[in-house]
Length: 184
Image 1 (tube, one colour):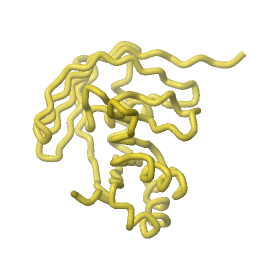
Image 2 (cartoon, helix red, strand yellow; image 1 turned 90 degrees about the horizontal axis):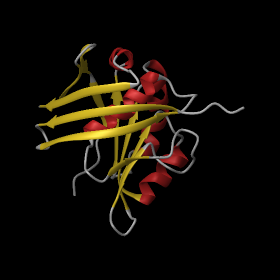
Image 3 (cartoon, rainbow, N blue to C red; image 1 turned 135 degrees about the vertical axis):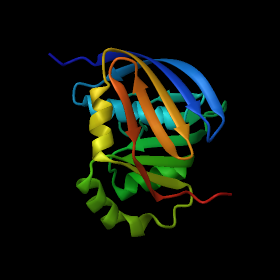
Image 4 (cartoon, helix red, strand yellow; image 1 turned 30 degrees about the vertical axis):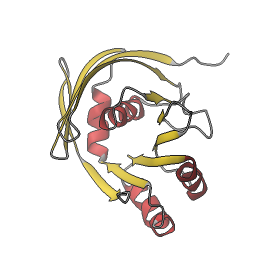
């Protein structure tokens, strides 16, 4: 018998002073049996960092050719494609060809650093790609905030990010931009 996804209910309050975005989101997040609490929390962090009323979760880790999160316009064109992990060059190029902007979040520490060292030069010409690394300590601390029913606040100011759970404390999230998309 196949294992079913674990459903998490999340009340996420976002105060993004850098983008002037302030909103509350009631989210239902399905955590695939093969997905860790840490990865699920990285998805929630990615949601908070790119929050928008039209931003939606993809169908999950077992669905190929679909991002972890995305925003489509009313015609179905993909405005924003958000992927987690260390996809191969072909998958990244395909995403950059399909979407106006692509944001990739890596989060596995030394493994991500080695992956980036090997692939960075091949992706240098992709003007719509942004790559951000999340420190392993931040990922572990975010995983400690996970519960089946969560109330979280995310504050973003001057590039700093803090995720807070009322019963489990606050996490300052360390981000490093490895590649920034060109403006224009």
